[in-house]
Length: 116
Image (cartoon, rainbow, N blue to C red):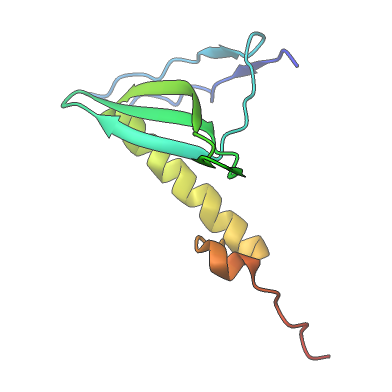
């Protein structure tokens, strides 16, 4: 769905501070992709985030390879902002729905029904 989302309205600039400028966001050409695997590398100037799909299918020759499909390249300022936003989003989700378990063995355990 193509939608132009305006950025937050500019705040009045305090003396000695730059004024914020409102910038439109055009998502008309945006595509969505599902990923369940990531790899992070980098260099002194940038963070590289490779994204892909791990099917977890075990074939006769071993597990199927992970198919990387996208690479995000960002500076460390953007990476830090992204890390903070993800931390907040996950915290809100856990507050509403419970802890997100990272250990696959714990996720697969059947939880006993709560006492009534």
